[in-house]
Image (cartoon, rainbow, N blue to C red; front, top):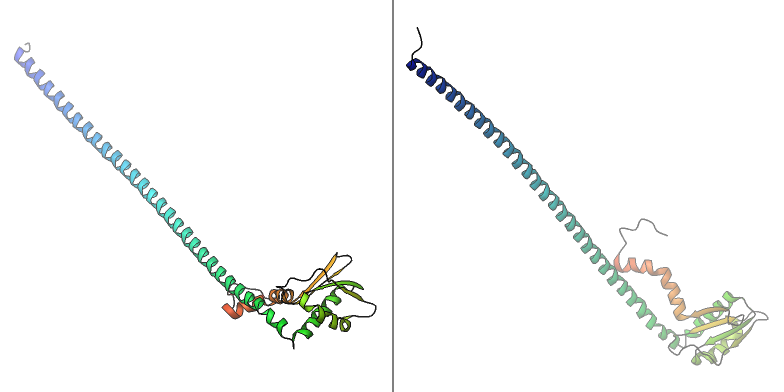
Length: 219
């Protein structure tokens, strides 16, 4: 017995419905998988961008912190330099004041002759030459002539330079030359103050500003 057209049509419709259902299910499966993969990729990209943003801000934060440290260090250094300059200016002022007071020493007729004699003898002992040219202030020439015999050792000859005197602003003392001017000894009040200042400046700093906490070694 043959299959009727109705049966064929029914089977065809049944097959088409099955195929359509399979296709719909497959499409839903593909769509669901695609949605899942999309969400996974989206999450990965979001996480990747978030990581980049965090790294960027972390880098910026480190840069800002570094700049802050550099700025703080520069400000500290600037403040330290200003403090050191103020200290040096004050110390220089003390030394300048001492220099300006040197003229009071030479103005003291009771003290200055013995001081001048000491300066002359120190200069002669430093030279240890027999023939010496001596230069002094014009106002001290007479006093030097008077003191000179007391300062000479045996056979030593000292000639006072009466053409070239020490500057009038010099506080006092002498300059001595030997070997045709090749050897020079400065024995003035200013030179002695400079020598003493070089030796006692650390003590003056300590007296004025206190001990340096960063100094580890002492002479």
